[in-house]
Length: 377
Ligand SMILES: [Zn+2]
Image (tube, rainbow, N blue to C red; front, side, top):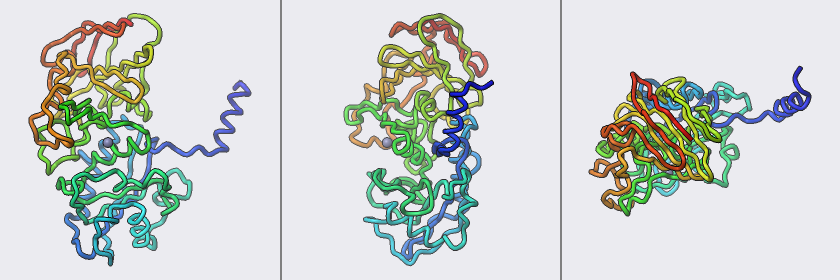
């Protein structure tokens, strides 16, 4: 028999119709392509669609990061012509652009076709337009609705965003797919940037995580034209916060052997070791999918303190945070160390043990696609 309290809780939860989290189970996205009167569409609908659906696309990124727990299902409409000319001052602003785009297509789309959680609204309404901002520092307000504005007040959608068909501001030639989950990480999950302090040659978690410069791609040598097209994975603590992995928690004290599958594949686990005021996290970053072009693979060791995530680099050199200062926006390609093959364990330097914070990792090795080690805590 189900205890009465649990039954009551279940009933209440059911009545409240708890809205689904933004990256839970599945979401439909209606993608409206808007061609400004003075800006011809720079790419075909098919090119946009290929960035969003299929191999190496944003849907693929969600699939791989969430280990299939979240399916993002976009429908890309044909380009629709607007009688407005592009105005850089307002035409990246969701408050202006979302309602305008909706007016252009509302007579030929049905909300219920894009409403997988059946709340009477489109799950996500995206606008991708033909304009190109001249500024290479575009704030998140230019693609997500301001914090104090609800998308649902503007259009019949739960969430929404506005993007350029190519690059961001003046940078890039590709639809910036890494930008969307990175900014959504700020907007919907309150994740902080983990860039470090680039003006001081500190690059935080580098390309090992999407909330760092991993949104740009896997390393510092990527061409600027292809920035945001090969975003790396979220770091394990962020992934656990979204609900895409169930971490194995090692509470109290103990000792055991761990056998971790690659985080890119279903069943790849993250491990959390909670300490006083912070947690250590372990994950096996494998060599496939969106991790393929990272400079190394193996065991990543993270230290999470509140909203700050740090990578404890196996080689002990912390190169990612002792580099050259490249100014406020260290755009690739550059010679900075955003990640190197000595960062994971055992990695390029074959570092098979680590000790600190009352935790000891030993016999760290890669066997096939597994990372195996002994942990004492
Ligand atoms: Zn950011």
